[in-house]
Image (cartoon, rainbow, N blue to C red):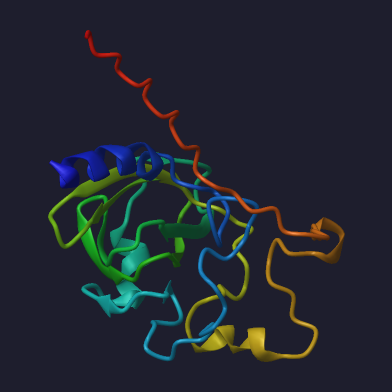
Length: 190
């Protein structure tokens, strides 16, 4: 029962595929930058996957958009895993590979348009969404593969955390759960 409730709560979030490359909101990285560069993740034409089932060089030719846009245009297809689970990714019926939790992956050089992306968790739950290709994909996805070691360089700023938007708090205000009122004492007849 709990699993069914969790899946129902997750389904709307998975149906809305974000357009930002790093996260669903404000371009922020979805996970902390404790380990921003993982050398085990794929690089090149298919980025940030742990396992690939398809030849990265053949992926662009294999995948065809459901709704194509101008002929000859090539863009990047962002694959965003907003869950805390490993996901097996299928694009238009072609198994691509496995992407880690809270990770943004990308398939570069695909025909511009809208693709049907399915992400299947280890429990068998499959979320299906339509994802548009984008041209403004960052050069480096952080956290990500070894190229994301740029986050270690001096002057690096985590996406979405500019000095102008930082909010500082003078004192932390605690929160306690409300306590229900005590029941009225029952008056017993004499």
